Length: 163
Ligand SMILES: [Fe+2]
Image (cartoon, rainbow, N blue to C red; front, side, top):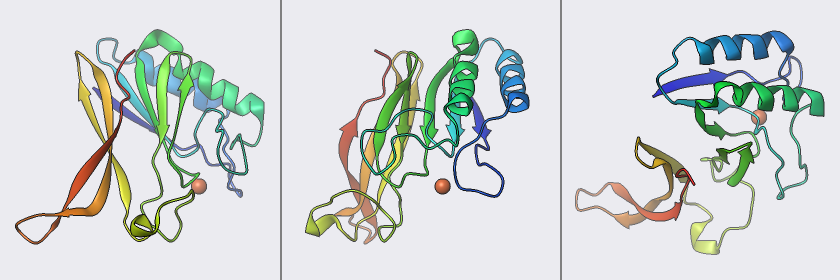
């Protein structure tokens, strides 16, 4: 498994941007090692969200489409993981599954949570298996006290396995 992290922030702003030279570099990185699957991390989700005030988070559609095209180069990217919108979401980039992690800081987290969940961070744990692809678990901090006195997690599941 290879991991590639992309800086998708538009300089001087908070929208996403992906310039032609970044697309060329991403394609070079994808082509650099042809045998391993790749997971890509982006700040801004490169897909349409159906929740929240904005459906798209790049400054221009052209920029997001450039990123989407580059991600699909070579068919080796098998998972895309993003942030920025502070709420959990899933989407697609072609046949590639994509997800957004909810904001770990509960005071900045978006979306509706029941009262007992309001102060409990939720995070994603991604597990890769060559046979099944990615499975992503949503874990709730403090949902189940461990014998050692620390916090463990209960699992609500969102599968990102290959279809
Ligand atoms: Fe952001």
